[in-house]
Length: 225
Picture (cartoon, rainbow, N blue to C red):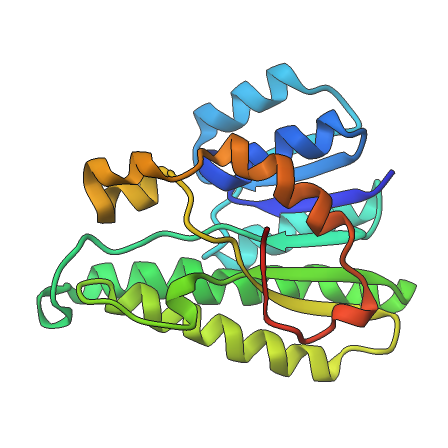
């Protein structure tokens, strides 16, 4: 049984992964911004699973969350930085400063905040895998999603640099999850998003794949099956 920390469990891929990891017998420690969704998850899944309302863009809130979890049950075996938002479709010059900041704060700074407060304990233990969720738009681009592309390209570089800093026995991996029918995809693709797998369908294949990752994958840009 592995301890799995997942950010962004309120909906979409995060929620689907949490449910599938639990179904397979692993312990999930998750966070999300929606207090309502977190309450629902708490109602469905008892200890040792743990869910908390945390905005990863806040370093202080992530610090408090990590401090609590690292006492009991301890460092995660698998740390999944999944939380992300996307800008409303628009040319870059029409994206407000506030909206641009929000995308950067969650998608990039949020990942670093989680790494800052969880990874030292994993290093001290000498094992663990960190998966930072990238995107197809972290390796290519498209019009009207420039802020999102910028953060996901940054995740690719940040993760590969982190991989060079970790001790032997650990791994940091940038993961392109593929194209999945989530609220985020619907905001970009509209009705055509329904042509792609649901988050739950995706998780059936992706979770075993995530469980298979180890030190030999350190620094490799991977794509979920």
